[in-house]
Image (tube, rainbow, N blue to C red; front, side, top):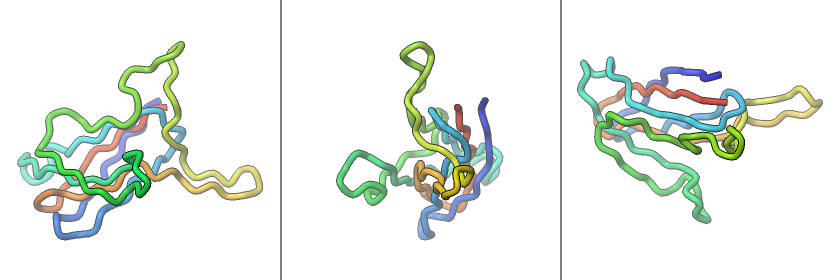
Length: 120
């Protein structure tokens, strides 16, 4: 089941907003919300787990987009399943597991809003 939420982002000089998983997540799509800034896209800056020895430190930029940023596999593989990217917070087993950090985002211009859709 997909879960969608809107998250406000700081302008380019502001701090990055950390986006955490809210459920068991196999794929995430991130797109700038068209209703923000009168429909004028600002572009995004992001930091992710890029496989380096220092994840979430290198900043990448993308122009205003029409296609979402996709984390995970866009099409499920291996009998219709994809690897799990992360999970939401869980304290059901007598200890607490923190939610998985998926990506850090901020606007490339004025403050904006992004639509995050998580797929299980």
